[in-house]
Amino acid sequence: MLDSKNLLFPSDFPAIARGSLATLQVNLGYRCNQSCVHCHVDAGPKRTEVMSKDTLEAVLAFLGRGGIGLLDLTGGAPELNPGFRRLVQKARELKIGVMDRCNLTVLEEPGQEDLAGFLAEQQVAVVASLPCYLKENVNGQRGKGVFEASIRSLRRLNALGYGEEGTGLRLDLVYNPLGPSLPPSQESLEQDYKRVLQERYGIQFSSLLTLINMPIARFGSMLQSQGRFHEYLGLLKSAYREGNLEGVMCRTLVSVDWQGYLYDCDFNQMLDLPLAGGRLHISELASVGLGGRPICVGEHCWGCTAGQGSSCSGALS
Image (cartoon, rainbow, N blue to C red):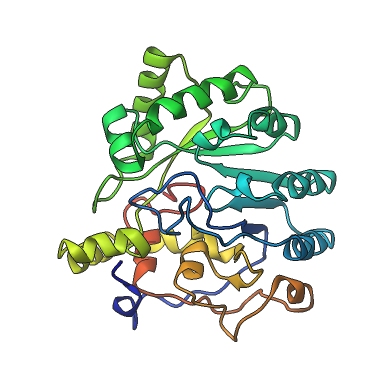
C-alpha cells in the first residue's frame, strides 16, 4: 500500500486551536469483519491491534472524573473488543452518552447475536455505515453480501425501536462518496435515502451523515495508484469554506488510539501525528489542560472544510 503521509506536509491549512473538550473518541482496535476500500483506518479481519483491559480501565478512570458528555466508540468494529460491553455499561452508569460507530454486519457475527438488544438496552446511539442505498454500490465498496446483511441488521434495529421518533434510540446512517468527489447536499440525499429505504425495505432511520473521504491509508493509496492524489487535494482546497473552521470536530474532541495515546482527531491518529507538545497517554490527560492548544494540521484537513464540510457528525454547513 502506498503511504500518503509525506504528501500531506508541509501544509498551508489555517492554524486552529482547541476549545473545551466535550467528546472522547476511543478507537477500540483495528480488527474488523470487513475490509472497505475507503477505510482510513486500514481495518480488517487480519488486524490484531485491540485495546487492552488496562487501557480500557484508564479510559474509564478518565471518564469518571467528569466533564465528558459523549463517548464515541470506533474501530475497526469496536464491538469486537472483548471489553466493549463493560465500557458501554460503565459509561452509561456515569450518565455519559455513548455512540457506537457500527458497520451493521457485525450484528451477524458469531457471538454477537444479542448485540442489537444490548445497544438498545443501554440507549446507545448507533451511527451505521451505509455508503449507498443501492446494492451494487455498497457491495462494490464493502464486499459481496454486505448490503444484504446491512439491510437485515437495520431491520433488526428498527424492530427494537431504533430510528423511531420518541423511543430515544437514535439511528444515523453514514454516506461517503464512492470515489474522489465531494458528497452531494446532505439534506437532499437524506430525503432520497429515507424514501428508497422505506419504499423498498421498510426501513426508517433518524438522520443521514455525509462524510468526505480522506486522502490517507487505503483511499490515499488508491488515489496515488490512479495518479489522482494531487487532483483530489486540489478539489478539496478549491472547495474550502472558512465558515467550516468553527465546527471542525478537533476543537471539542480528542481521539484515543488502541494503545491509549491521544490525537487531535481520528485521521491524525492514522497518520501517527500526536498532539502538539508531544505524545500524551489517556492516563495523563486529567492532569493536562488541552484548551487553547494548537491543533496539528496537514493537507488532509482540507477535507473537513471542503464544501458542506465534514466531521464525525456529518456536514458542517
